[in-house]
Image (cartoon, rainbow, N blue to C red; front, side, top):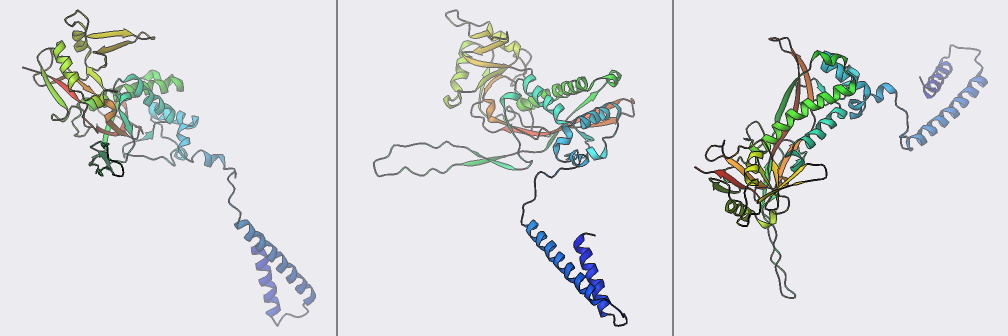
Length: 383
């Protein structure tokens, strides 16, 4: 009970005493003096409360440590949660309730959220280990949301003085991202029970990133759109298709000619290493090599064909192994492909009853599809 309530309760008691006619020998002077003092104090307290209500709430009020641990996403990056996460993955020890209070679980089968420290390592490796992933456009739209796209470019026209150009109505289309689930399962050996936290986090990020990079990059190129992202090569009618029986100088020049000049910047050749090495051995009529390999400052090969960069990937077939109609190489500007993901990866630990193995399952939600295929020039194997 605060002081204001105590004053009001005492005033009610004194009032009851005065109303009770059975009570005699009351000291009215003392009662009156006390009532006046209580009234003055009550008035002052009410005034202070009114003034306090007009002052904005202070932003520096200290928060108890127990509450600080569970406020916001920072809890997942704390050393306490990271150690708890390691114990959860290795020993299936449940994450303490106070560390899971504000956890935002996106799918019902996720047992714990990967700490941001580990997740950042996974994302960094996904963007550095892979060759395709760093080139695409990453978005973070809500699943099912239709994103408008402009299908035409406005054209400027010369007009006479005092005249205006005709208004141009933009033709808008849209793309819609789905909600596809990518998983990888990691088996951790007994030796991890004596691992340091840094070694454990490095091992987890290596295992998860390598598996997910391959799956995502393969889907970016060859995805069916059914339960996975839609690949660049999914639509057979998209872009320009050239049938080739063998690679020669004329074929490469023709492919370059099909690439619109507006898409020159950023477009690259995509093929397997074996396909490129076959082209690397080709020369023009003057004996000059068509494909070139330069070595950068770090000793990393920098490949190009007719001056255009080459991206080596394992997600296509070379000409010898491909079936008739298979795409063996293509030109594309990867920034025209949108990969939509929240980059929130969860992990669940469970026991395989058949083998008694402890399995760690990581889950990621993502989708992707080409926004523009005007830069796509495909080379397919001809019979």
